[in-house]
Length: 79
Image (cartoon, rainbow, N blue to C red):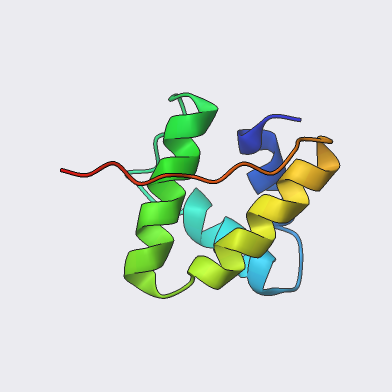
């Protein structure tokens, strides 16, 4: 399942992850056509700014579990 499909599927959840998914879908700047890595970096940055990174980390863990992906750490690029 792609990250974009996972976001859409999560939007129906009555939970903080569902709330996050709905926020993502409403984000006019969301880079839906970028690579998975770019999307995850964007979401990590935005949720840190918005104070919801803990929910994003849960969302990310569910996405990886769903796709049987080993956990990797997202490293922030220094500017």
